[in-house]
Image 1 (tube, rainbow, N blue to C red):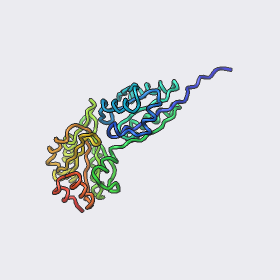
Image 2 (cartoon, rainbow, N blue to C red):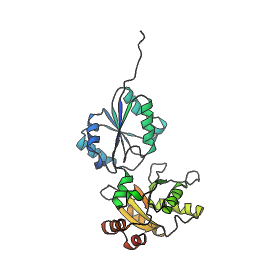
Image 3 (tube, one colour):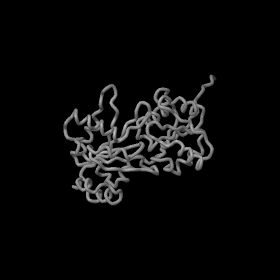
Image 4 (cartoon, one colour):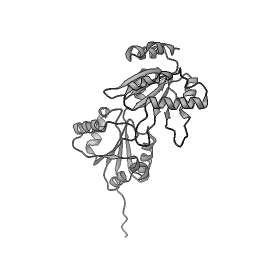
Length: 278
């Protein structure tokens, strides 16, 4: 009988690091201890790699960490991961935040499944739930999320404008995630504001007028996390947020308890906060 070569089924663990390396879960650490190899994708969000290596060494031990680039994943179709899976090795892919929030991770999940291997998702803390909890805003009062993207070839995505407009009309808060530059740098709140202003010039529907109040959050979960509240016309205040990753929240009308957290726990400008009260 002719010998039929079959590829052994292996398992890829896609593990969410969380918003900072020390948010790694106990379950994640247990898996990282037993896999043959650990990959890291860190281009979908900013990540302190040295701090991650320190956490891994402390909890997992001496194990190689191989960093994958955008090219490795999107152009080379995860060949480095697939080679190890095809050889029968169980491997882990560490990703910022929570897996499947980024479409890149959904692509990897499907690709590996199609190749006949197993995929296990181990969740981490996402910026989406973290920013809601941090600001003390009701999760029931958030509408769809949008990403402020850099214009490419002179084309501006108007989705952040449309999503925010619709959310505000329904008295819902909006989380605006910020884009990654082609060179791998991360958008700041100041850059996002300039793009939102340009969208307002083009649309002129009163969404991102100069009086609009926004909240900027920087490096949530990091030891030096920061937050500020400002009108668009005072966006220079965001320069005090420091390095990315940054997130923008456009608040709708506030409930009393939401305003209390912003003012008395986070110490945000009470005059601006009170203006937003329902």
